[in-house]
Image 1 (cartoon, helix red, strand yellow):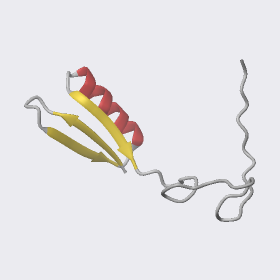
Image 2 (spheres, rainbow, N blue to C red):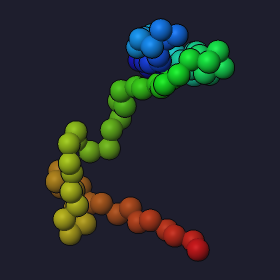
Image 3 (cartoon, rainbow, N blue to C red):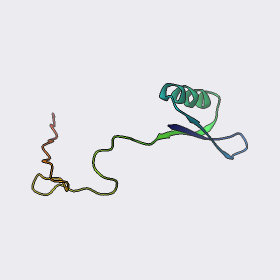
Image 4 (cartoon, rainbow, N blue to C red):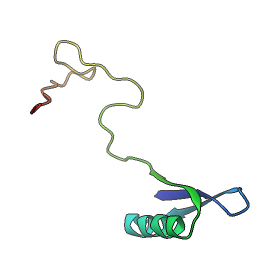
Length: 76
């Protein structure tokens, strides 16, 4: 489910729901091109990494006991 929110020409908030990401993106693009303001899109992420809220890594281990091995590689 994807939701597109925008402010209508009278300054009132409006929204519409879409099941297809491509359609939601096209509608968002169209609203912006038509001069609507504060056009945003949101969705519920089904495959979150970790539990909702704050997770932590202690000594390379996640709260659920899984090993956390990801390392950021920086190139400068």
